[in-house]
Length: 487
Image (tube, rainbow, N blue to C red; front, side, top):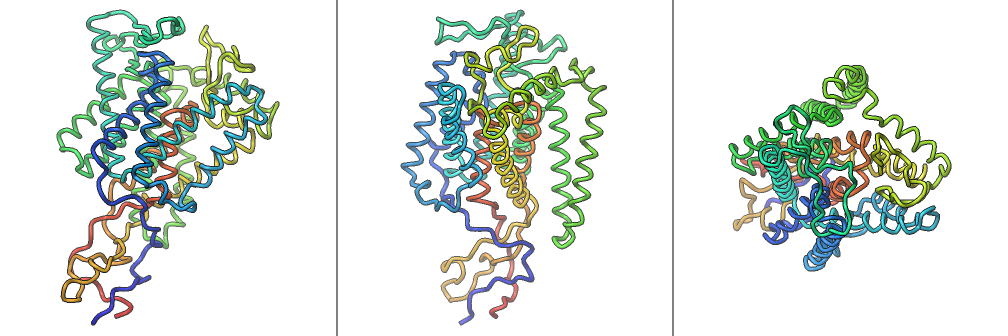
């Protein structure tokens, strides 16, 4: 009786990844709907805040997090994960944030910041553990369709029927009013000025559009949506990208496109020759940065933006001077700056607007957690980036055969049985974590959203998922298997 095929190193181009820990069975419909609502709420949190007010938004977030915990407990997925499968840099970062209450200069604000951080982390962990990559893609696509669609409808209603700026109503918090300088929408759909969408900010809406372009394009290639539907929503995303007129996200789009092109080139380079290509890619990346900086002086004025990134350089200088007062462990974690606590109270006020972030996630981490936090955060990004890169460019290998698939009823392998170590075709979804992470990291250079709310949830999702389920498997190879080493 012939033996089962053994792994043939000559036919493998990369080491076999650890088996995926996610359940092969599809997630229940109720759990998938919960995932879509969690992503919609996290990525569009500003819309909920503008509509309902902060107290109601906090209740909504706590309720959704509780639902995530209940779903995790019922599925028993978290309990089946050994400690070695967790992202250690992510755990270290969360522990450091929590421990900062010990040396925090504003303990009450730190408690709130730690709580919000863990709420986002739990939701991200729930998504990573409970769903396959394709299910995550679908949930992301659904959430982004609602966010982009509602944004366009909202701007259309304001422009056609309201015809004047609309402030945030805070329907469930009538005792307080949003800041006077905040307008939910300025009704700019038809006057050539940037729209803000339901999130109330053109940069936030533009970043959602960038995520949508990544997700919708992968959906089109993977055929998880009807082609006409996918193409229609790609068109909507491109339209809103133009309407937001966001210079920073335009540059981020160029950066993500560059990462995509490099990944596609590397896919076609034999593994032994890839070490030669990486320095070329690095030089190309540095060249892109130089060209972008030189073009910014001409690009930003065309989009009605200053060449100092709308005052960000001034903000960075102020925050860095403050951060060097506590350079080792920082002032204590707070995520969003607490406007009532020192030193954040009126720390940055530009044209009457109070700013509650450093507009750079790395500078914000340095301010709040010092050099130690910056090192841990860098390790988190680096570890996630490396695993995402491997997932994007390494050829996926056929799944490990089971006793049932390895032998048929006659004791022989069937023609469509998995072959261990045989490369299978690339999948477009393998690019999802790399491109989303690239977008998050590039945006983190001009915004602090990476360490708060929806963007931090995505970071937790990616850091966890690429560790526990590092490579989506391609379709099973067809035809008779090659001769194995064991013969």
